[in-house]
Length: 198
Image: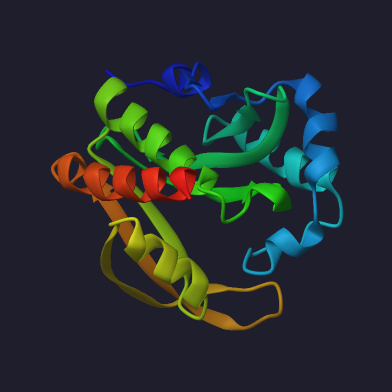
């Protein structure tokens, strides 16, 4: 049976990156790469990194969210973060989001690599059946990125949420299931190889 403790003990070691749970000592590393521009499409505009982390840690304390950091193994520095939430252990599903990467790593292949490693771990190591994402229907960049990675577009949640500006947004739903993963992992692997070989 999957438990919250499993999510709290995530530690993924790869040649290029390490993905693990947030520690208090990680705050300065996240502060160093924080940029308020990351949150254009988020529900909340975080004035400081501390605001972002404190909100996530409040959810961690309720065991409703796992906060992860991504570390560049070459520099040993934190280069980004991601969260797991909307968790159902009974139904073996969760959502991935609240993700951001340091600007110098964006568009370089690290985003698909991080997602690949996390999805593979969640499905093949922990035994989740479904990993999903939601994005603003107006966020064309995010939509195209998910489609290029092979994620399945499942539909639209109409008038699903209220943005930080007060606009009522429609949300696009994407997902990868355990049954999709063999095919999707190949698409992602090819994209990752292309990024790091160019």
